Length: 429
Image (tube, rainbow, N blue to C red; front, top):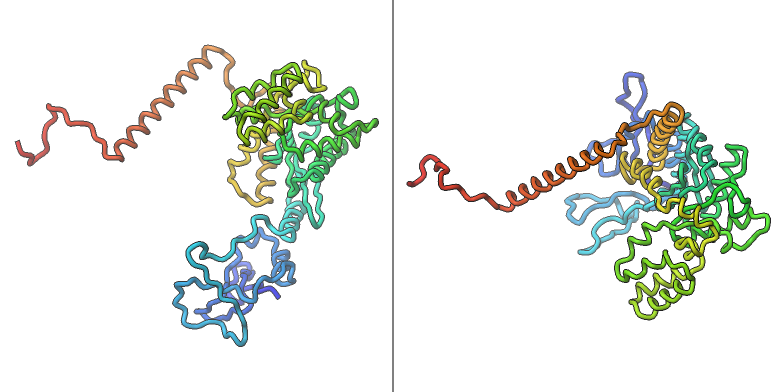
């Protein structure tokens, strides 16, 4: 039996005659000085009280304890629960850990999915935004964006996938699975959604000689393997996964250069025209460098990694390869805009905030394409931009100097008094 219940207050109703709900321990009493948990439900008008009552009153979540009273070591309470009526465990920890176990870092399935479903059913704006919901006992996936974004995505010749931010260009994904099968289902459901909205299946140039030329991804083995499995499935000839990936993927070069700190010659891997030279450098690094560089280089010898890093080993034509941007600035910019509302938000808050941002982006895109109205009015004049750059540099230097002066002042530094400076009153001459 759960240790908490949701109740309505017997007195203290509001002007409409409604009683304010509260959550309390089963062992609570109406006495003023009672020791059990009791708290009012804040903003209960916007909360799904019916679902909240099910959580506590219908045992949706398994009980973890009979009573939730946890006393610190410094407690001065003179009375405790009667051991004969309610047995309990005394948990004492010294020095290293003196707090109750932390809550789980992910919300339970029983809470997360009904909350999203409630939001979907009650908020028309969010219902328009959430396109697909998939839920099973072991996985959850939500695809959310507006149909205008899907239609624009369907005509792009390349797009970016950044699963560290759970973003595909113009489309957001929530998933709790980071496995090869999970990524395979993600790509399959995304491209199925595009076909459902546009009425046309998405095509890939490597398979259909038309459509998407390249997909920019990171070097996550599970991610690009899941993509390759999906492409193998839709290919009429069912060519191998390796062939599929060599003709479609491009890896982020910015991530490649960020980790080059110990062996500068590694940067040459992306420019070698001969595969023998590429392999020879890898062999030399594996033979002579430290274990960290050896493991990194062994990973870069993979045929998939070669094709994604070096255009000379890819099945994508060199001209098209060079025309596709090899970064994820669009996805990262969208992610950082979403962070403006805060981090570690609830799933419902993330979806509502993302819907507002994406709607604003759609309006800005329509204004630009239909009316040539830009959301910012920066001039393209070279002289004006250069003068703005100079002014920005001067401002940065001024802020740094002021910051340095304030830090010196706080540390007790003071300028020497000049000889002509008058002395204060009462000073000795």
